[in-house]
Length: 390
Image 1 (spheres, rainbow, N blue to C red):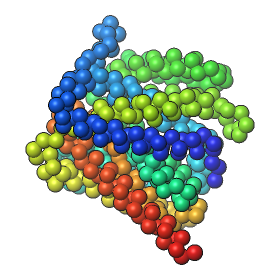
Image 2 (cartoon, rainbow, N blue to C red; image 1 turned 180 degrees about the vertical axis):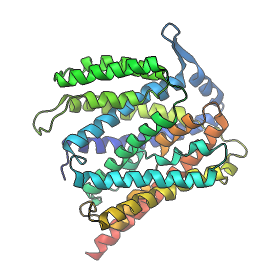
Image 3 (cartoon, helix red, strand yellow; image 1 turned 60 degrees about the horizontal axis):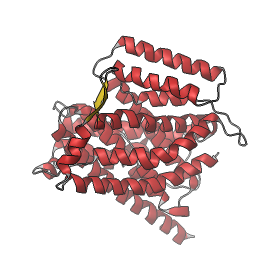
Image 4 (cartoon, helix red, strand yellow; image 1 turned 90 degrees about the horizontal axis):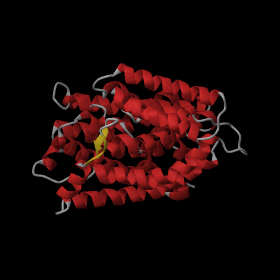
């Protein structure tokens, strides 16, 4: 398997940023349930910006629509680089994480649907579909060199494909109303970006300026603005050279630190400020709670391994190098760490219903905690057992 130098850096950053995310989650929960809770929520509800360009939004919207677009830009850069020169560059390498990701999206969504069909909660079916890249890679990286690099790459590629699926779901199913004039302007920006790419323009500024306009037009079109980050990423030039650093790789290097250590922690602080209320724990034992928790904790591992098993038996795909099915189960469990993406979809699913959003956030936190702890334990036991058999 082709392992790029930048991918190794990505794994390292994910480990350290994952620890920071856990810390931010703890801080956010403590603040929300202290005397500072109301003040912090008022801060998130404070509008900033200007009415001239219709850009006067609460701080929370700037975080979830603005900063998250930069996060998705980095995700898009990861996807494109892996397609061109990494794990997703050939069908034999790409097929397993792609198929596994598909199973890891469909089965959780089905579980949620079975619990919530015909109810007001049914539109949250996409909540358990997502995998959090930073947290899942942070947990597997904590196992150190015991983990085959191929397994880390498989989980990362799966999570990247999963996030791409989540972006498509957001664009198609969580768009309230389409404004075709702004959508047309968005398309014009994409055409400009493609022309710049074809002309082999390498300076980032010539892509970032149209990218900002793309975000603005996309935001006003009704389609969630985060997809602008991915579209921009796919326009940034790259190459297959191992000696020459491409514009894509340079931008990726510049953005990883601010995304992993500023943007994602801010998102965690802003979106896990859950004030525990009477009845919230009871919500875990409702069909809504079951759909989210079982979808993430069981649906992910079942879907990923079932689809992987079928394709491996058909000899279309193969297991990651030096890995076993017990380790695949552990990875499938880690993929159940939905956290940021699942919370993000929950916010979109139940706009204007903060109590339901809080219940969803709490269920996602519980499911992610279970998935992380059990996944870590399964992988750790598997590696120790394998070492003992040698």
